[in-house]
Length: 402
Image 1 (cartoon, helix red, strand yellow):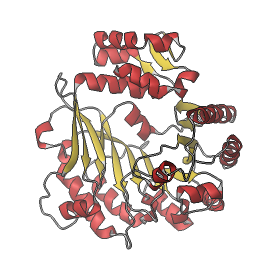
Image 2: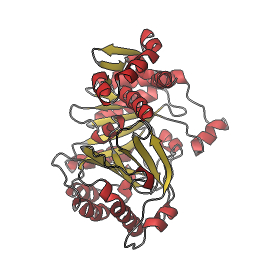
Image 3: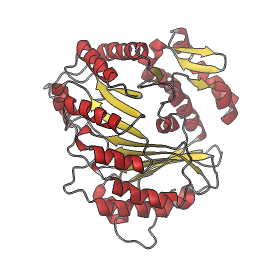
Image 4: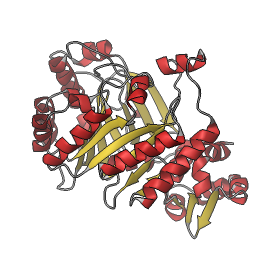
């Protein structure tokens, strides 16, 4: 639900729904997302909490078209289809599910069975995002993953028997000790599985994680920026020559299999997040002071369950651990920076119509150096990063913010 001081009558055409399922078999050594290892998983209380939070905020989203649903985590595939059935029954009583709706679930190979996959499919879940991360078993152990490379292969075979067509596989690269040859081996392995979509993320050494501590203590080497750039180039070249179209810095797909839910984030569309630690973002009335708001549910399972997990007749507003008021100028900069992550770039005419021509011209002036250095190019009304620019996307973003 929108925070008390950010109510609005502004209504856009559609929105995406995100469910955060924070439960994991174990905590990966690199992960900074909110998650918890709970034994046993408080399935019933968490479902009540999601339903109560949904009921407390659904009025803010009535009249909008639900475009995508994404179950992320954590490990959403820890929970059985019956959990999601109860939530979807409530959801469908308030929103129509369009025939082409994209419903995604993140999955860990160690948590899936053929029966569970078919159960998810019976609910309308039509996109699976499988966290393989690497096909080197020593790399999986280093990252703290709870599965082997053989389990990834077996899980994909199982999905194919179930008729899963929209399968995405996640890879992590530039982790400590990985070589270019090791990366190529991962790419060859993932191509053999023929997923519709591949996400390849450069490992971020996040402060406070066990992996960051090991790197800080020099127990593990920190990958160099040169290595990261070489790996990015190898990934783009290898996957491009294998029939995968790069549509975002870290994402590649077969034609027609782009992640529509993630595109909603990159295009600054509205989304509603349910669950402990979930973020929401919503455009408000157009004005220079408060163009939109972004807020996060309390990233604490105990607090979230106490707030919403019991039988509550009229649950109050969610406790937001963080609320960001998005100004007109900030929204514009985010639109430009996120748009440049997309290979297609930013449609300047559309942005000028949504915001202001002066803002667009000022942004172009800020990017003069990046354009002269061949990092950014303008093709008619589209502004996009060059191949080299995608390797230095963070630096280009900083030029936008200067």
